[in-house]
Length: 370
Ligand code: DAH
Image (cartoon, rainbow, N blue to C red):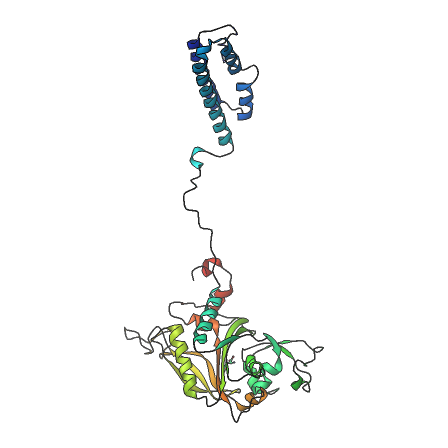
């Protein structure tokens, strides 16, 4: 920068003009220089700087002109300061475009939601709540007694074969939770293969009538498009006086219409379970062909082939099960039903899930669609 100043008195207008020229020169230099803002600041405002030299001329200016000169001096200083701060911001990556509008609406942080199986469990719970069924929880690792024997499946009974089961090594655990069965020795523990273990456990609470909905994890060693080793079932149990199959059918229909849609109907077919007599399989009309088995173009429905899809099992509670739960089977009776949460969810219209394993793959791109 050329030395435009001298310590001797100079006319006010000339000083002002020198200051304005200095402003221009310095700002140009700041903008084009590769030096850091801090280094430039030291040089521009330092002891030996042009700016300090020019400023010192103020004292030689006549009194009545000092204000005018002072105003210009301040403006020049501000302009240079501004240029220096801009340079500093640029080097930190902040530009004029980055200014923050505090009045602008914020960016929504990504929001999660409940897993679809949890959503289904909540929906199922609410539907049965409306009918007076209360959700209960029972152990998911339980004694063989509750999972099988109390349900009319004595040890070595072939009916147990249907429930491929994970057994827990529990030789050193004594089955003494319940005084009544302390005499029964050498029971094993299992990962519950179904939620029916909740039936006798609920009866043991000793409160009648019973209207429970037991939703829990179940385990069976299977792995394919429609089976996973850990899944969920829900088990309904109603015990009272004079309960009929008509009551069961009413509850099944109410559930089907609430969960799947008004148009869906259910039917019960004779079947066999050890813990119910009579026993049924519950079917629901297919949501694709509306229970006709035929598509509008006349072709057979590929999903159901005959209009019905199998939902789960149900029946009137076997007297032996009532007795295992300390209930007088000559006074009380009831119905039970139970089936898989995941399977039921997959049968909901519009879900179109063709592989149950997708539910537990933890792929966020899949899960966030629901
Ligand atoms: N526990 C049976 C299963 O996992 C399903 C079932 C059938 C439950 C009939 C019931 C019932 O309560 O009455 O295959």
